[in-house]
Length: 118
Image 1 (cartoon, rainbow, N blue to C red):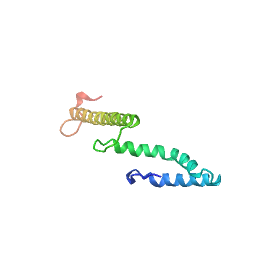
Image 2 (image 1 turned 30 degrees about the horizontal axis):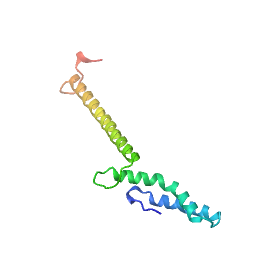
Image 3 (image 1 turned 45 degrees about the vertical axis):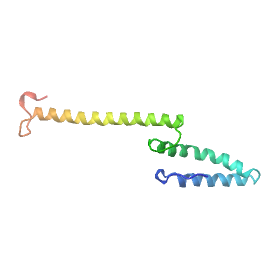
Image 4 (image 1 turned 135 degrees about the vertical axis):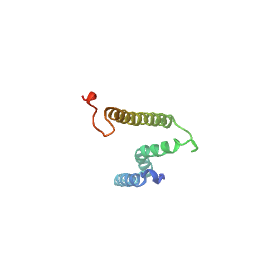
C-alpha cells in the first residue's frame, strides 16, 4: 500500500491496522474486496502519511508540493519553536536575575548583608 520512512516509526503500526482491516473485509466475502479494502485502508493511512510527508516537506531541500495543510503545520511548528525559545529565554533570564540578587545581597563569605535582610 505505502512505504513509510522508518525514522517516524509508523510502518509496523499501519501494517497491523491494514491486516486487521483486511481480515474484516475478508469476513464480508470477496465481492469488491480490493475496493472495500483500499477504501478502509485509506483512513488508516491518511493521518500517519500526512505526518510523515509534512515532516519531510518542512525541509526546504525536499522537493514536492506543499499542500495548505503542510504549509499550516509548518507555520504552527515555527510558532511553537518561537514560543519554546521564549520560555527557555525567560527561564534563563529569571535564573540570572535571581543569581544577581543573591550576589548583591551577600558578602564575599556568602553571608547575608545586614541592611538587606527581608
